[in-house]
Length: 169
Image (cartoon, rainbow, N blue to C red; front, top):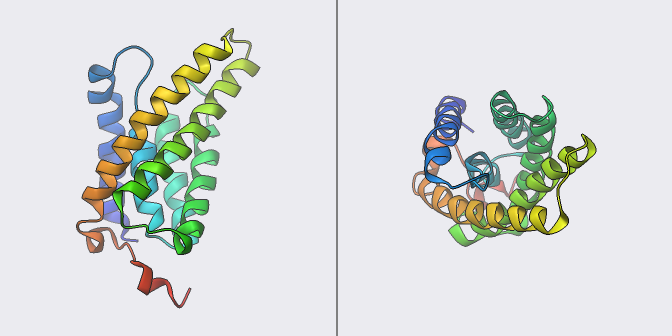
């Protein structure tokens, strides 16, 4: 993975998440652009690179969230490693794969966030939590498909590896 283009994309995604997505999305239901960036990039990376990319994206997300610091870094690092490990068994260049995995990763990230909110004493009904998680996950899945399609048009810009390049791993 090429780290300078990755860092530029990561910083741009944080800025877009904290400005444009908050203005466009209604209420507390916002697609997670950080997950949408994590999925396609980690699918073209080695395991260590996926872990590091997830950690960086999680730390950037932690800077602008109200969750306990380090929570997103840990979850994103585990997701980055898992996505990089999953690389050999999925068609990583396809936007549908990015959308499906973006939906699943968003469900996991949102579920952890809701769990932390409940543990901290927040009162939230199960129906409201499930509805919010589902809407955020659907939006994130669509966004992940779009970001993945754009990123995988020029995989060499980010140093992403296609399936045949992983045969020696």
